[in-house]
Image (cartoon, rainbow, N blue to C red; front, top):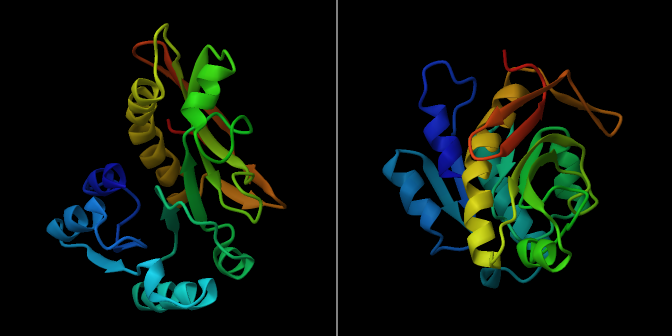
Amino acid sequence: MMALVAAAKAADYPAEIVGVISDKAEAGGLAKAAAEGISTFAFPRKDYASKDAHEAAIFSALDELSPDILCLAGYMRLLTPTFIQRYEGRMLNIHPSLLPLFPGLHTHQRAIDAGMRIAGCTVHFVTEGMDEGPTIGQAAVPILSGDTAESLAARVLTVEHQIYPQALRLFAEGRVTMEDGKAIGAEASAATPKAQLISLIGDLA
């Protein structure tokens, strides 16, 4: 999340971060965002009798903020169809695997256990299927001999911080959209150091 905040500070970045919402009052990102002058909201799940009530509270904050785009970052609760339909086509998520491989939890350990040679992350549009939305961009890193889930997660995180701001830029500039359940845009890819690869829909030139 803070990678997006940092990117948005650039004068030529096409998006502004207007608010940060969490379902954990103790989330470290809230304090960091507040320190940047960004509005923050916390809605702990335990404070609400139902998922619908919890999402209604989130809707109230979103109505106040009136964002054009929602970016999920580490939000671990599945959203209801009502929520997704309200923002479908305008909601992005980043997942720590090369989807469609390893949706859900424990992605890094599952990649290691499967004998994969690469891992990575995916920025995608959010749809009702968990981690099934159309892909905007992916970044890959090597899985090294002796890697643990923790060491691999740290390596993947470095490219998460690169690709999410790039994907948001493409969407905010209208160079990638979701139409008929597909991400529409021209493909581009760029090599990065240490055998890392970033592939994005849209033209970053």
